[in-house]
Length: 592
Image (cartoon, rainbow, N blue to C red; front, side):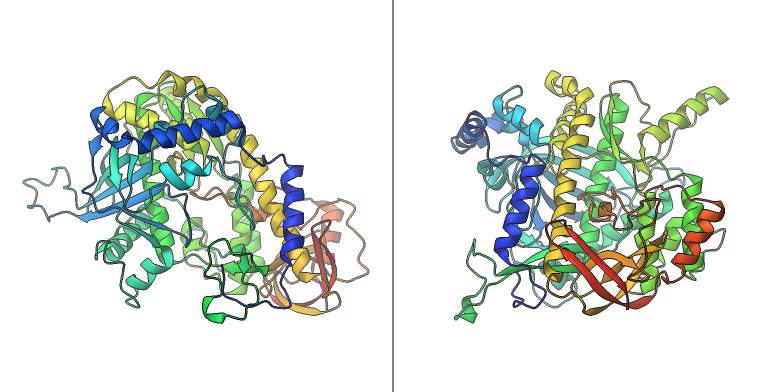
């Protein structure tokens, strides 16, 4: 909980809880687990506590408790999906010949929570997990995918606890290219539970790392993370490091400042909105997750069975629209400069750049899942398609490569690193373990594949709707009572005479009109696009403003352009708040 004191732009906790409860009810978010599902989870946790580690080893799992694994998560996290250990390998002897295979320079050990150890296929818990699909996060509390006896207990990679895991071992060469990847069931034991802030402070030399963690962890994470960022750039992938609009709980007033905010489960004094930029170590850590997902996709494609996370490439008209935005913002975008390189050159603290990056999210849409019951050639180099003979065969491979790729990552990719929070990851992990062991993929995993894409699509929409609704409601709550006041902000987008205004304090993104007397546009387009609040954790699957809306031509477009001219895109302006309606989740400004 933030130690920031209550301010004039704080949403009262009772109103927030009431609004969030209504949102959860509206979208069918379950309040509790069915008794039989909860009983199965409790029984599975009890069985693990009663000799589960020994049984796991007896069944052939690797004993990897010697690895110096640690978890790195936000402060206070209990659903710990991943633990990592990084190695710089002994520099090899120079190769005997130039064509010799490169030697491994780095080794990534990445342990992922093994949910298949606890979930009985076809049971009541399995059915409930399919109904939920993923954890739904809200400011007051999360609605977990798994009962907390598993997600915060027996299945979570908590420090100093023996846990079952899907253990990845990935070797990289000196450039960060994948040389070898393998996953197996293992018994692991995390040494320490670290936060992103702790690792960043250690990397910056501002604080010592927990002595239980390897001293070289921050530097190795930085080194491998940067190498993978370079490989991403070489593939043509892009990660948008834009500030995230987030909701923070803040402490209630207390007569004991020394102990304020320290008690677990303390009731917040309110909620506020902030823009939060990711720390560098968060981006490096994300590259480890992306690396693992890329390796998992290659394994599943090679076996011809699995489930991929996909995203179609942007259409040419989307790039043309984005170039028009760049011209309007006076951002130099040479014709020969690839889009990913342009994005990496921008600074989100510059208003015009922030507006462009906000619009650039429109290229990342259409993400989904693709089940692979058919054989797919997995012999291609990382992120590419294998050459084959014949034009028709080559065309077929190109079509398959486009169908299986993730455009933002510029490679085939799979979700496998967050099984405590996302249903599909359990299936991907079990498929990869079976393939690497040379065993048949479990029937329960294969039979579920055809229905998984729709299950994840439905449950993902529900979770995003709650997230969007929470942000919209909080925006209106923190602004309520301030109608008539003037705020300073940046215009992120302009469409049909209206725009999106980003106010930094409080962190609000809301509709902006040129004049209070402007009529609503007859086309009915709404620039307060809630999808902009819906990034998905774990990869670049983000939905954003400008979601493929076709440009209009002729006199109607000219009229819209003249109306929009009153709203200078990418510039800092002063705007007056005219509406803050918490019930409708709506906030509006006009130019001051």
